[in-house]
Length: 199
Image 1 (cartoon, rainbow, N blue to C red):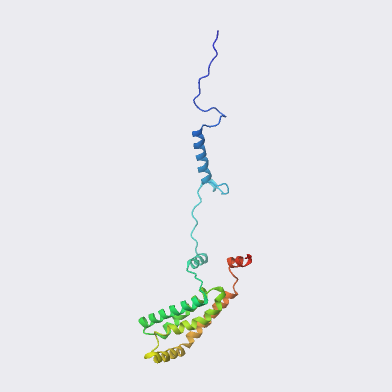
Image 2 (cartoon, helix red, strand yellow):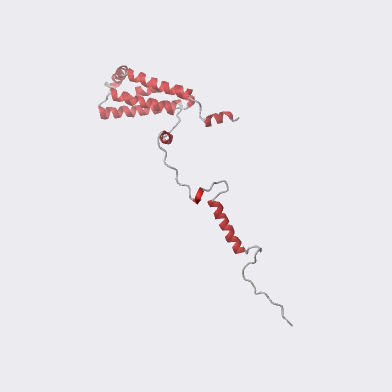
């Protein structure tokens, strides 16, 4: 009587059978790594090459990026006046220390301060910049005014203002033109979006 043939016992998983828990864990980890390397919406580069780093931008685009990295505060009208007066007083002291109170040096330093004041003031307070820059000019002349006592310093300040009226008018005109250009320019996208959203 023939005995039925018995198949040798297979130790590995059968085909079509679900994987064992350790194999399923390894396969799940491999699938997660593959999904992390190649997200579903991302395009794979041709030839399996990794995308190279972006080339450095040069020209006007690079200059605009550098300008955007510069500090860009927003002063109120009072803050712009304090900024202009404090900076001009420091520049007046510096002019007196380095150049012996040169009127031309002080006037040249006054022009960029006027531009910064008009650029850094808030959009709602743009019209205050042509008002505060002459005050800052007068405050900065205090270290340069010649005279003894309060009345002597006051007379020296008035004399210095009369002697440097050209620089004063020029800086005020620059601040006014800068403020008008900013006012005529379109508002930023964020500000327009904030105005359209109902409160």
